[in-house]
Length: 295
Image (cartoon, rainbow, N blue to C red; front, side, top):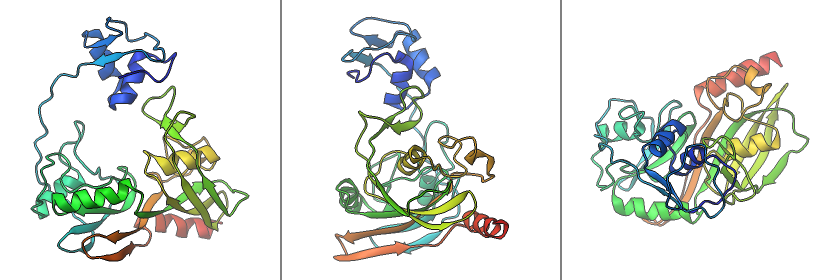
């Protein structure tokens, strides 16, 4: 890789680039598996723009994808795809830290998918572990390829409900701030000048004391996009321990209050516009009911 930043620790930079823990990257450097401009350096080495960084990652044992008896809330199904209302707390696909209790494990327990992807069969897009709501699963590799193209070309309309802290003066706003890795904490995302274009459109649906319900339409699909944009505006999601502030974190909610409630796209197989909409998950509905009474 060619460094696009400067004055950042090597272990921090690599961690953000390969999406691994800083300690993992530190060990790679100490084991001589990282070269900067052809030389071994320390983990604390501060990179410079255009440094040539070579990282050798030891081959890991492949994940053994196993079915798991996890309930699925299926909203719609046809011969091409499945629409699932993912519960909060469920990862979409296996990773080294969570090999078995994921949406993929639940899917292969119920379906025989025709997909050569051994790690993410059927998965076209993803939701964060603690984000609930609609997700599409393709039943075969042809459908996966076609629908993935729709997402890539921004031809899928995606809307979310978000419970946010604060009281904005606006009722509607469009945010087009670029998003990239946080310059210090490489496991976080942030609004940064050299990031990737990200666009969110936000409407205030209802206000209470200290919080409001937002309807958020995203035109791009950057990592943590809504959470980063709302935090950047000064109105972080309640329950968000990563991007929240001191005041928002005082409000008790078990996860970031974010729910994918609407998906719409022109289906290339059915030759028609298909739309799917669901209501609030139980935890957000219960919170709104209680907060409305107390407000």
